[in-house]
Length: 133
Image 1 (cartoon, rainbow, N blue to C red):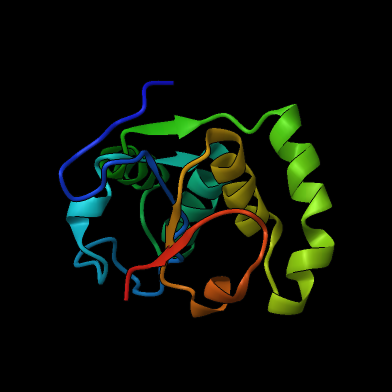
Image 2: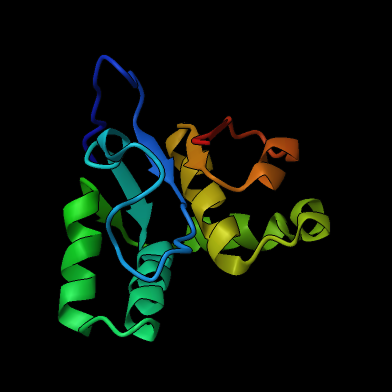
């Protein structure tokens, strides 16, 4: 996997941004963060499902996911093991499997995570968490 870079963010970037508005755009976090980032396949499925639940066409929802990131990264065995190990450190913060999948991907890639979820700033799991708002 190629590690993208930019002047704003010199590292690869992973993000898990739970979408609360019913539409895909406009989006609260700066869109400039997204095209150089990657997302776990688990999180991509969650983002698509959220849009479909709100009435979007499934194909359009998937195209929205793909247009917003540089790559969708497959969830593999190493990430699954890490996500499972993170349960004790993250359950007090209410993190889901999708959240832990994002953190596991960041851990395997050695990159920070961008999120709008302030609870993540309290995590001590060896991943740099950057809040977008």
